[in-house]
Length: 199
Image: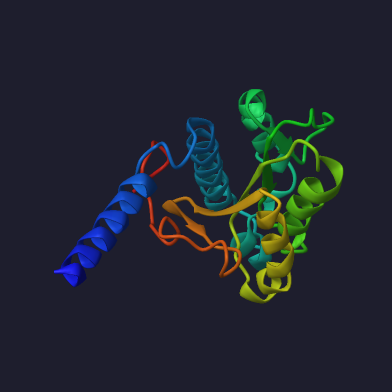
């Protein structure tokens, strides 16, 4: 009988965590909005790259507009200014205000670990007294780069500072854990909601 109760209790916890993971309570509305804006921007950049007559194979693969031009990364940061009411946006031309939440935008940088490093530096050094949660929104997840920083992620978690990594594509997004200690059941749930999807 005790065994059944233990199993039932475990099932209830799992169901509760699953419901929490797919509800808006797990992700603040401003993060869902930021993810949708990034996905919309990715779709626009991809479309404009496909419409170009450029024969450069690298531009066709990586997208020339990710870094420069009207559809460049600066235009994405401008679109995200509205969520600055809730979180510091990095990178940004404005100095971060020191809010308890921060959003690191790490889209196709030349150094793929830069987003994670910026998150750790911001939480541990530049806003240590106020920072409680950092969201990294990226289009790339490279395990070798992430594993190097797992001890830093765990040390911040022990201090009450959470780093959350959102991998975004034009077709959806998923949260990935940055260490074994911080992995939860809400990780690995692929989501495809919002207006950004295009067929």
